[in-house]
Length: 123
Image 1 (cartoon, rainbow, N blue to C red):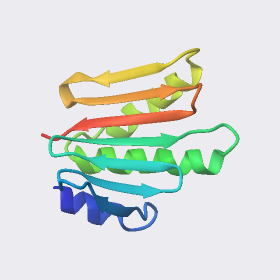
Image 2 (tube, rainbow, N blue to C red):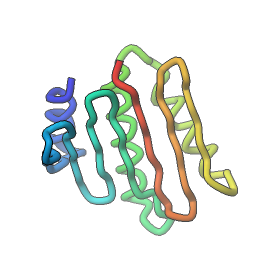
Image 3 (cartoon, rainbow, N blue to C red):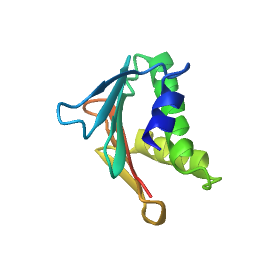
C-alpha cells in the first residue's frame, strides 16, 4: 500500500518529493504547504489552510480528499465526510476535531496556526 500511495502522490496535482527516515520505518513526502508522513500503521498529513492563500487551501483540500479516498476506497461518502469536517472547522472558534471511529480517521484544524491534519490508520 505504501508504494501505491507514494506513486499516486508523486503525480500531479500532488507532486510530492520523497525521503525515507534514517531507520527506514517512515516515508515522508513534501510539496508546497503540505507534508505526508507514511508510517507502518498509519498515514498522517498536515497542510496549511491559510485564509490569505485560498489557492493553496483549495489544493490542500484536494490532496486530503485524494489521500483519504486512496486509503479508504470502499468509503463512498469519504469526500462528503471530509467536506463536512472542513466546513465545521471553518466555523469553529477554537481548535476543531472530527473523528470517524468506524473508519479510523481523524481530522483536526487549528485556526491559530491555519493548519489541518488528517490521520488515517492503515487497515
